[in-house]
Image (cartoon, rainbow, N blue to C red; front, side):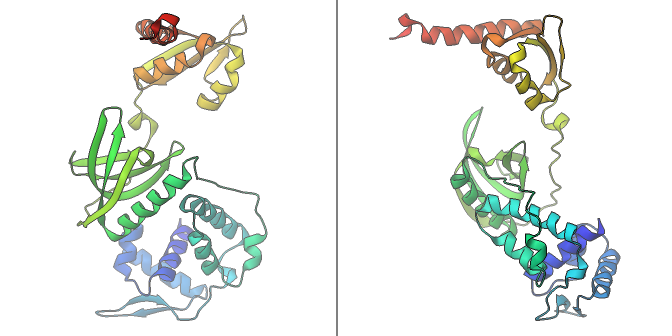
Length: 305
């Protein structure tokens, strides 16, 4: 949307002394003509932008200017503020709040009028996670590789990555970057990283944002059907939505959903204890039984060695 792009252009101009139209066009993935129209629109809105042609020229905001509140409505400002507060909850700083104050100089009433939307993206592991986000964000901006020890279901490995995007998805934080070891783009979960440090600079390659659609990241492999005790209805609604089950005549819930991984499917069914019975696929019923028997074996009195 045009207003989003204009806010982005203002944000960049507030942080950089001068930028060029080609830089903005590449940044926002639009034509230079579109950027020129945006600059004209900002000038018409009363923001004195200075353009200098030729080598060393560019676009800048006139020194000492404060943005007039007429550019944004109260609703616009509140939407921006809610998002920026969410980013501050991750970084542990007030950097984005300060950016908002720059964007709204002289409009303090808009900042305090509505605080009913609260976005907190921090986690239980904020003390360990926030420094990683700050370090990775800095590496992305400066164009430096990062190295870290990574723990995955396949084991422990040392990775060196060209970082391109920080992604908040599935209630967790991830890094999207080019992995030197795999020679391809990969998604890394920040909580699985240790010994993270910034390395040498690199020449950035074309990097589109990751496709994080559910069907691509978690392709449906197993169609699970299970009978679930009604006391777990809250959990089904929370994890899969209210349409994932039907109520059987005996009061139990007939659950149906796709799973991409058999171990996750088995572990999920087993996590209900005796409150769930896997109906389909039949071949996974034996795996659930073995899963339960392994647990029972560890807790038998004669299991101690």
